[in-house]
Amino acid sequence: MQQEDDLRGLAKTMEFMRAVSILFCVINVYWFCYQYIVECGVNIGVVDKILMNFNRTTGLFSSILWTKIFAVVFLALSCLGTKGVKEEKIKWSKINTFLFFGFILFFLNWWLLYLPLPLVANTTFYVFTLTLGYILLLVAGLWMSRLLKNNLLDDVFNVENESFMQETRLMENEYSVNLPTRFFYKKKWNKGWINIVNPFRASIVLGTPGSGKSYAVVNNYIKQQIQKGFALYVYDFKFDDLSVIAYNTLMHNLDKYRVKPKFYVINFDNPRKSHRCNPINPVFMTDISDAYESAYTIMLNLNKTWIQKQGDFFVESPIILLAAIIWYLKIYENGKYCTFPHAIEFLNQKYVDIFPVLTSYLQLENYLSPFMDVWEGNAQDQLQGQIASAKIPLSRMISPQLYWVMKGDDFSLDINNPDEPKILCVGNNPDRQNIYSAALMSEP
Image (cartoon, rainbow, N blue to C red; front, side):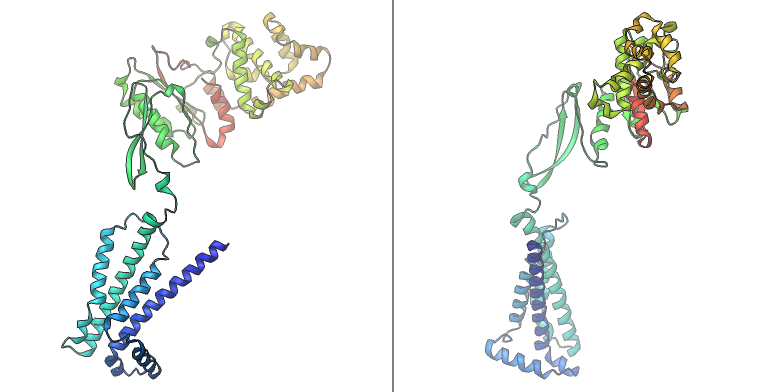
């Protein structure tokens, strides 16, 4: 609050000084163009007496330059209070030009009063050049004050002290990602590079929405990795922003691959333009622990709060139940029905039909013993709660689009297979991210 009051007081002081400066210019015109003013019928006796007395005691009007010098002095003082607004277009060459012409027009125009012309012409030329010169000096003073404050007196944003020399060398290898940069150091802009020479150590990009994360980093990762012949998995949160970049880059760099990769897209919004992929393909499951991992990933992506409750009864129960269903579909008729939609539909059947089928397999009987103990103990409410905790989150994924995309096998998920590399783009939708994210996270 005190600082704001001080700033307001400083602004008023600067305005007062500028007003005094203008007043000296007006007095100069009044005194030295007095003959024309009298001819115009203006006669202010009080002002005449004041100025005559002032001149008698101080000699202010003994020369035409004195009032002009005082006007420029007060003008310069008023410019000192100008805020140091950063303006890259202001250069010292422009300031010097304004000062030069302003000085000539303001100080060296006295001879215009003695031209052999009508009095009105002499006065008009004198007032015009005096005014134009004053304006040029004012503008030059404001610009000079801004530059001095930014460069010499006060680094408002501490840019100079916080700047440092950054990497300007391009260090490239067969795996690297190189991001071009531009940084401010020693009062000038420099070009540099962020060299990620070992991208296998993983990278994280943080920034607010719209800060340029994709433009500056993600797009470069996609382009440069494809140009180096890598397989790629692209999670396109705002489909198809990143997918278009990946596809176009691939089309221009097919010669970089020993085996030409295939381009696949998973898009739940428009299944007609989507490939199909089964995230619980039985080929990739060799043990019931693989089924548990799939169920674990699916359920925790549908229920983010469960991550903090791992080991709780009503968290582990639905995961175990879904894992048993997935493994049953894997071993039944060689996995003919082992798809994500089949697992959801099977879970939504009556439990009196589910458990007899599952426990008919010896390898699942012990796995489901907690459920069977509750069922045989007639604790129906508890059993219903266990099953409901699995049904409710998975029911959000009951959708014709999701079912169609996730029950097919247009390609396998071994995207980095050297003999069959793939560029896989999975598209999300910000308006449906809670549903789609779980389905996409159950992919590779």
